[in-house]
Image (cartoon, rainbow, N blue to C red):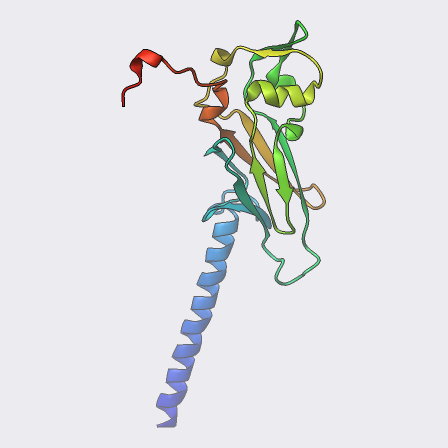
Length: 195
């Protein structure tokens, strides 16, 4: 009877050890993007999606906040692991003018002032409340900014949100599109309105 009991205990022990090993391998595979990259200990979450290094095509709607959770893999083990910073940079290039001089959107180094960013301890919300021209006016206050909106491709990423870890050694890039950023206003055709 005791031989059967010790055999069962050995089998259960081996199965448990195998499950732990498989679990560890699964976790490592998840945080290394299927063993194709280095282990990611810093990432962001948008909705239910974890973004380990980069993602493009995240749509932002004018006036609607985009919530981004900032996560550290080992923060539950060490509470001192926290903190982050956010920067917004161009992802597209087109020309615009400032007081008659031509500038390149892609050459702008920082668009962060053109957004409303509310930072919490472990998350932030980013809201775009301005069109392209108004966004550029925040970078060039008091100057006449003109943009030909036909030069802006609303189907491609217009800007990239970069989230840096506390020490700046790691980052996650979120490429964002905004289809309604190219709208300057709405003109109604009185002859087409039917009630």
